[in-house]
Image (cartoon, rainbow, N blue to C red; front, top):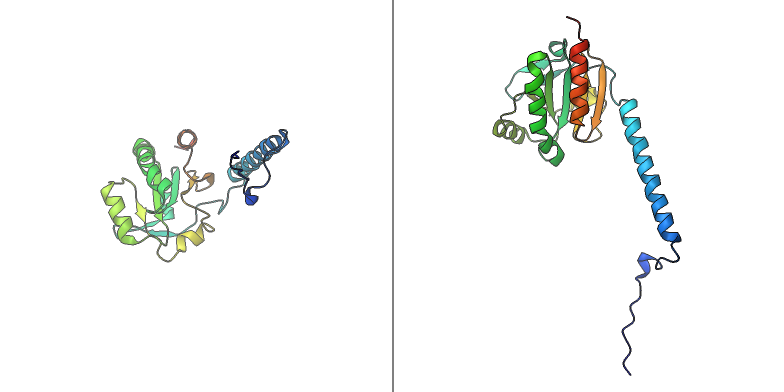
Length: 192
């Protein structure tokens, strides 16, 4: 009589789940991880990393000009650190351009700062092929990254008010509904 082949669970996967307790433990661990991530996000929103005000630095732009922080003050300022090799950065650029076009006539400033490891020719080609409407800066020496206290990941976006006080920070793609709402609030509250 032939026997059906016996398949054993690989040792590295551990024993097969038993009476549902493993499923319960897995769900509890998942809930704990999600709650922990929620705490991480809450920390990110409430305890803004980096400076509390726009750093007083100059940004070398891809067109050869230099943009000084002082020239950005007076309206809301969005500073976005990005890289051409960063898929979320590339994906968010059309939305950033849309936000800029919508709010630039009312006083929004936006500067996209390429990471030091990004090749200048790649940044120039990307900005040109996408017709980015806002200033794009290079940071080959890492001065901007240092002035902002280091960049944990890209994209990283800060929104400052008209006086330069940092209002919001997003690590990863911003919540564009929240970003627009905050820009709108800053434009409305701006002194005439």
